[in-house]
Image (cartoon, rainbow over all chains, first blue to last red; front, top):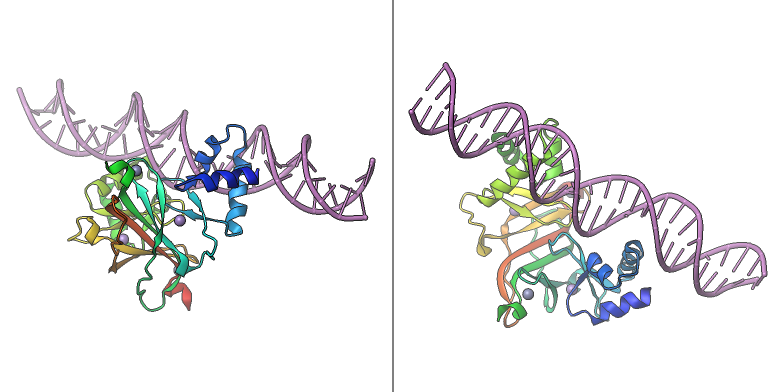
Length: 119
Length: 119
DNA sequence: AAAACTTTTGCAACCGAGTTGCAAACTTAC
DNA sequence: GTAAGTTTGCAACTCGGTTGCAAAAGTTTT
Ligand SMILES: [Mn+2]
Ligand SMILES: [Mn+2]
Ligand SMILES: [Zn+2]
Ligand SMILES: [Zn+2]
């Protein structure tokens, strides 16, 4: 199962959600897929994105990724097609927090129209 | 009802979710509160924040706020107390999107430990 | 004041994403 | 082979959000 899920993940150009993953199979259990994603995430094979769509989306991490703050990138969520893109070249800026606030992670999602839907 | 909800909202130092709002009343219906928040949001009295906690949070907009991209600010979600702060002084940076991608809005949530939980 | 109309509210039901316990199926180690 | 550990499928459940609908409350018109 994990191999199949990994397969699907590598084929994706945009981040995928659990319900979407479910549909890709038609024969696998939600719980299994759910646990698979959790396992992958724990082992930093994938990262999750809260794009505000109501469901978490997941995408493969890059080889060198340690999921640490400085490796975080911006995500783009298209209002039209609903797809969520990894903007791997756009690092998440680290804003100057007020005194006493400690940065540990961040979720930066830009919304708009993707290049595919634009035309 | 709306007046009461507005009252609660003005008293909040951090953003509040629908379930939290529900608890503040003990006698009002979820649906009513839900619709109240929606109405407020439509009229740009409040803005919503996807902090990844599983529930949307809401906070009053500032007077001059038009909820447009340039007025967006960063939010901070504390991993310990779960509170979500409006960082009104930290504008959301507008990253250089690749060709064809059109910016329309953004959700930038920084996670970590808040100054209150830090000590 | 009563009637007619509009808006707000409460209730109940529903949906969808996520999550969990548990037993069956499968894999690996002896 | 059996025993031990791991993965899977099923069912049940939680929780946030959402909706239809009819009752209640508020407004306007006569
Ligand atoms: Mn990504
Ligand atoms: Mn805010
Ligand atoms: Zn698109
Ligand atoms: Zn805190």
